Image (tube, rainbow, N blue to C red; front, top):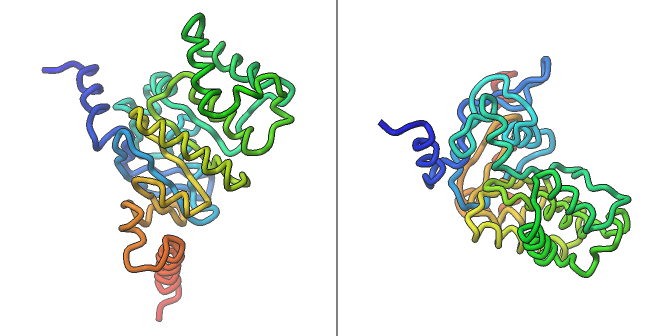
Length: 264
Protein backbone atom coordinates (compact mmCIF):
# COMPACT_ATOMS: atom_id res chain seq x y z
CA UNK A 1 0.00 0.00 0.00
CA UNK A 2 1.37 3.47 -0.85
CA UNK A 3 2.09 5.83 2.02
CA UNK A 4 0.37 9.15 2.66
CA UNK A 5 3.18 11.07 0.91
CA UNK A 6 2.71 8.91 -2.20
CA UNK A 7 -1.03 9.54 -2.18
CA UNK A 8 -0.50 13.29 -1.85
CA UNK A 9 1.95 13.35 -4.73
CA UNK A 10 -0.48 11.38 -6.90
CA UNK A 11 -3.33 13.79 -6.11
CA UNK A 12 -1.04 16.77 -6.69
CA UNK A 13 -0.20 15.46 -10.17
CA UNK A 14 -3.81 14.63 -10.98
CA UNK A 15 -5.32 16.96 -13.60
CA UNK A 16 -8.53 17.01 -11.53
CA UNK A 17 -7.36 17.76 -8.05
CA UNK A 18 -4.90 20.55 -7.23
CA UNK A 19 -7.66 22.35 -5.29
CA UNK A 20 -10.65 20.33 -4.08
CA UNK A 21 -13.55 21.86 -2.13
CA UNK A 22 -16.32 19.60 -0.78
CA UNK A 23 -19.51 20.95 0.78
CA UNK A 24 -17.80 24.07 2.08
CA UNK A 25 -19.88 26.34 4.31
CA UNK A 26 -18.91 29.48 6.20
CA UNK A 27 -21.14 31.59 8.41
CA UNK A 28 -20.57 34.75 10.43
CA UNK A 29 -23.28 34.59 13.05
CA UNK A 30 -26.60 34.65 11.21
CA UNK A 31 -24.95 35.60 7.91
CA UNK A 32 -24.10 32.79 5.49
CA UNK A 33 -21.18 33.88 3.32
CA UNK A 34 -20.45 30.56 1.57
CA UNK A 35 -22.97 27.74 1.31
CA UNK A 36 -22.41 24.14 0.15
CA UNK A 37 -19.63 24.99 -2.31
CA UNK A 38 -17.90 22.09 -4.09
CA UNK A 39 -15.45 22.09 -7.01
CA UNK A 40 -12.24 20.50 -8.24
CA UNK A 41 -9.61 22.66 -9.90
CA UNK A 42 -6.91 21.04 -12.04
CA UNK A 43 -3.22 21.88 -11.91
CA UNK A 44 -1.68 24.28 -14.40
CA UNK A 45 -4.84 26.28 -15.17
CA UNK A 46 -6.07 29.82 -14.67
CA UNK A 47 -9.49 29.74 -13.02
CA UNK A 48 -11.55 32.91 -12.67
CA UNK A 49 -13.94 33.56 -9.80
CA UNK A 50 -16.63 36.02 -10.86
CA UNK A 51 -19.99 37.11 -9.51
CA UNK A 52 -22.02 39.78 -7.81
CA UNK A 53 -20.81 41.97 -4.96
CA UNK A 54 -21.29 40.23 -1.63
CA UNK A 55 -21.49 36.81 -3.28
CA UNK A 56 -18.88 35.33 -0.93
CA UNK A 57 -15.88 35.35 -3.27
CA UNK A 58 -13.42 36.90 -0.83
CA UNK A 59 -14.55 34.61 2.00
CA UNK A 60 -14.04 31.58 -0.23
CA UNK A 61 -10.57 32.73 -1.27
CA UNK A 62 -9.58 33.41 2.33
CA UNK A 63 -10.58 29.87 3.29
CA UNK A 64 -8.53 28.45 0.41
CA UNK A 65 -5.59 30.56 1.59
CA UNK A 66 -5.92 29.21 5.19
CA UNK A 67 -6.89 32.67 6.50
CA UNK A 68 -10.36 31.48 7.56
CA UNK A 69 -11.54 28.08 8.80
CA UNK A 70 -14.64 26.61 7.10
CA UNK A 71 -17.67 26.22 9.37
CA UNK A 72 -18.15 22.82 7.70
CA UNK A 73 -16.92 20.92 4.67
CA UNK A 74 -13.34 20.33 3.55
CA UNK A 75 -10.77 22.02 1.32
CA UNK A 76 -7.61 20.30 0.10
CA UNK A 77 -4.76 22.01 -1.74
CA UNK A 78 -2.19 19.73 -3.33
CA UNK A 79 -3.66 16.88 -1.32
CA UNK A 80 -3.29 18.71 2.03
CA UNK A 81 -6.22 19.71 4.25
CA UNK A 82 -6.25 23.49 4.77
CA UNK A 83 -7.21 23.11 8.44
CA UNK A 84 -5.36 20.03 9.68
CA UNK A 85 -2.27 20.62 7.52
CA UNK A 86 -2.32 24.41 7.41
CA UNK A 87 1.45 24.94 7.60
CA UNK A 88 2.04 22.63 4.64
CA UNK A 89 -0.62 24.40 2.58
CA UNK A 90 0.80 27.84 3.41
CA UNK A 91 4.16 26.72 2.05
CA UNK A 92 2.72 25.86 -1.36
CA UNK A 93 0.44 28.85 -1.95
CA UNK A 94 0.88 32.52 -2.70
CA UNK A 95 -2.03 34.74 -1.60
CA UNK A 96 -2.59 38.33 -2.67
CA UNK A 97 -5.60 39.95 -0.95
CA UNK A 98 -7.41 43.00 -2.28
CA UNK A 99 -5.20 45.26 -0.18
CA UNK A 100 -1.77 43.71 -0.29
CA UNK A 101 0.56 44.90 2.47
CA UNK A 102 3.43 46.62 0.69
CA UNK A 103 5.64 48.80 2.87
CA UNK A 104 5.13 52.25 1.41
CA UNK A 105 8.33 53.75 2.88
CA UNK A 106 10.53 50.94 1.56
CA UNK A 107 11.87 50.84 -1.98
CA UNK A 108 10.89 48.26 -4.57
CA UNK A 109 14.07 46.29 -3.85
CA UNK A 110 13.63 46.54 -0.08
CA UNK A 111 10.06 45.24 -0.27
CA UNK A 112 11.16 42.23 -2.29
CA UNK A 113 14.14 41.65 0.03
CA UNK A 114 11.80 41.66 3.03
CA UNK A 115 9.75 38.79 1.59
CA UNK A 116 12.85 36.86 0.57
CA UNK A 117 14.11 37.24 4.15
CA UNK A 118 10.87 35.72 5.42
CA UNK A 119 11.38 32.64 3.24
CA UNK A 120 15.12 32.39 3.92
CA UNK A 121 16.14 32.88 0.29
CA UNK A 122 19.86 33.73 0.14
CA UNK A 123 22.94 33.78 -2.08
CA UNK A 124 22.78 33.09 -5.80
CA UNK A 125 19.16 31.95 -5.56
CA UNK A 126 18.21 35.29 -4.03
CA UNK A 127 19.84 37.14 -6.94
CA UNK A 128 18.17 34.86 -9.49
CA UNK A 129 14.71 35.41 -8.07
CA UNK A 130 15.23 39.16 -7.74
CA UNK A 131 16.17 39.41 -11.41
CA UNK A 132 13.36 37.10 -12.49
CA UNK A 133 10.42 38.57 -10.60
CA UNK A 134 11.36 42.22 -10.90
CA UNK A 135 12.39 41.58 -14.50
CA UNK A 136 9.14 40.27 -15.90
CA UNK A 137 7.27 42.80 -13.77
CA UNK A 138 9.24 45.56 -15.56
CA UNK A 139 10.38 46.91 -12.19
CA UNK A 140 14.16 46.52 -12.48
CA UNK A 141 14.46 50.15 -13.54
CA UNK A 142 12.60 51.25 -10.39
CA UNK A 143 14.35 49.28 -7.66
CA UNK A 144 15.29 52.46 -5.73
CA UNK A 145 11.82 54.01 -5.90
CA UNK A 146 9.68 53.95 -2.76
CA UNK A 147 6.62 51.74 -3.06
CA UNK A 148 4.45 54.67 -1.98
CA UNK A 149 5.57 56.60 -5.07
CA UNK A 150 4.61 53.88 -7.55
CA UNK A 151 1.53 54.03 -9.78
CA UNK A 152 -1.40 51.74 -8.96
CA UNK A 153 -0.44 49.25 -11.65
CA UNK A 154 3.21 49.16 -10.56
CA UNK A 155 2.18 48.59 -6.95
CA UNK A 156 0.09 45.61 -7.99
CA UNK A 157 2.96 44.16 -10.03
CA UNK A 158 5.33 44.63 -7.10
CA UNK A 159 2.78 42.93 -4.84
CA UNK A 160 2.61 40.01 -7.25
CA UNK A 161 6.41 39.77 -7.39
CA UNK A 162 6.52 39.61 -3.58
CA UNK A 163 3.88 36.87 -3.55
CA UNK A 164 5.72 34.87 -6.22
CA UNK A 165 9.19 35.15 -4.72
CA UNK A 166 8.92 31.84 -2.83
CA UNK A 167 7.71 30.19 -6.08
CA UNK A 168 4.38 28.75 -4.91
CA UNK A 169 2.56 25.99 -6.78
CA UNK A 170 -0.83 27.66 -6.25
CA UNK A 171 -1.53 31.39 -6.65
CA UNK A 172 -4.69 32.91 -5.11
CA UNK A 173 -5.49 36.50 -6.12
CA UNK A 174 -8.43 38.60 -4.91
CA UNK A 175 -9.32 41.22 -7.56
CA UNK A 176 -5.65 42.09 -8.17
CA UNK A 177 -6.35 44.49 -11.06
CA UNK A 178 -9.23 46.42 -9.53
CA UNK A 179 -8.78 50.11 -10.37
CA UNK A 180 -5.67 49.47 -12.48
CA UNK A 181 -5.33 51.07 -15.93
CA UNK A 182 -5.91 48.86 -19.02
CA UNK A 183 -2.23 48.70 -20.04
CA UNK A 184 -1.14 47.59 -16.57
CA UNK A 185 -3.98 45.06 -16.46
CA UNK A 186 -2.76 43.56 -19.73
CA UNK A 187 0.81 43.37 -18.42
CA UNK A 188 -0.42 41.76 -15.20
CA UNK A 189 -2.24 39.06 -17.15
CA UNK A 190 0.81 38.43 -19.30
CA UNK A 191 2.66 37.62 -16.07
CA UNK A 192 -0.12 35.24 -15.04
CA UNK A 193 0.05 33.51 -18.44
CA UNK A 194 3.79 32.98 -17.95
CA UNK A 195 3.19 31.53 -14.50
CA UNK A 196 0.59 29.18 -15.93
CA UNK A 197 3.12 27.96 -18.50
CA UNK A 198 5.43 27.03 -15.62
CA UNK A 199 2.70 24.73 -14.26
CA UNK A 200 1.28 27.02 -11.59
CA UNK A 201 -2.41 26.78 -10.67
CA UNK A 202 -3.98 30.24 -10.48
CA UNK A 203 -7.33 31.14 -8.93
CA UNK A 204 -8.19 34.79 -9.45
CA UNK A 205 -11.32 36.77 -8.64
CA UNK A 206 -12.02 39.64 -11.00
CA UNK A 207 -14.60 42.35 -11.56
CA UNK A 208 -13.58 42.62 -15.24
CA UNK A 209 -15.34 40.08 -17.44
CA UNK A 210 -12.86 40.61 -20.29
CA UNK A 211 -10.37 39.04 -17.85
CA UNK A 212 -12.82 36.19 -17.35
CA UNK A 213 -12.43 35.41 -21.04
CA UNK A 214 -8.70 34.90 -20.46
CA UNK A 215 -9.34 32.10 -17.97
CA UNK A 216 -9.42 28.39 -18.76
CA UNK A 217 -12.43 28.01 -16.51
CA UNK A 218 -14.87 30.17 -14.55
CA UNK A 219 -16.64 29.78 -11.24
CA UNK A 220 -19.72 32.03 -11.19
CA UNK A 221 -20.74 32.81 -7.61
CA UNK A 222 -23.90 34.46 -6.29
CA UNK A 223 -25.62 34.51 -2.89
CA UNK A 224 -22.92 32.31 -1.34
CA UNK A 225 -23.26 29.55 -3.95
CA UNK A 226 -21.58 28.48 -7.18
CA UNK A 227 -24.02 28.91 -10.08
CA UNK A 228 -21.72 27.77 -12.88
CA UNK A 229 -18.42 25.91 -13.19
CA UNK A 230 -17.29 25.70 -16.81
CA UNK A 231 -15.12 27.16 -19.55
CA UNK A 232 -15.94 30.80 -20.45
CA UNK A 233 -17.47 29.74 -23.77
CA UNK A 234 -19.78 27.29 -21.97
CA UNK A 235 -20.84 29.89 -19.41
CA UNK A 236 -21.50 32.36 -22.22
CA UNK A 237 -23.28 29.72 -24.35
CA UNK A 238 -26.25 31.25 -26.19
CA UNK A 239 -25.74 34.74 -24.75
CA UNK A 240 -24.15 37.63 -26.64
CA UNK A 241 -21.47 38.19 -24.02
CA UNK A 242 -20.11 36.81 -20.78
CA UNK A 243 -21.54 39.83 -18.97
CA UNK A 244 -25.06 39.14 -20.26
CA UNK A 245 -24.73 35.46 -19.40
CA UNK A 246 -23.76 36.29 -15.83
CA UNK A 247 -26.55 38.84 -15.40
CA UNK A 248 -29.22 36.52 -16.79
CA UNK A 249 -28.09 33.55 -14.68
CA UNK A 250 -28.14 35.66 -11.53
CA UNK A 251 -31.56 37.13 -12.37
CA UNK A 252 -32.95 33.65 -12.97
CA UNK A 253 -31.75 32.46 -9.56
CA UNK A 254 -33.06 35.57 -7.79
CA UNK A 255 -36.44 35.19 -9.53
CA UNK A 256 -36.65 31.56 -8.44
CA UNK A 257 -35.86 32.53 -4.85
CA UNK A 258 -38.58 35.20 -4.95
CA UNK A 259 -41.13 32.66 -6.22
CA UNK A 260 -40.13 30.21 -3.49
CA UNK A 261 -40.57 32.91 -0.85
CA UNK A 262 -43.88 34.43 -1.98
CA UNK A 263 -45.46 31.77 -4.22
CA UNK A 264 -47.34 32.43 -7.40
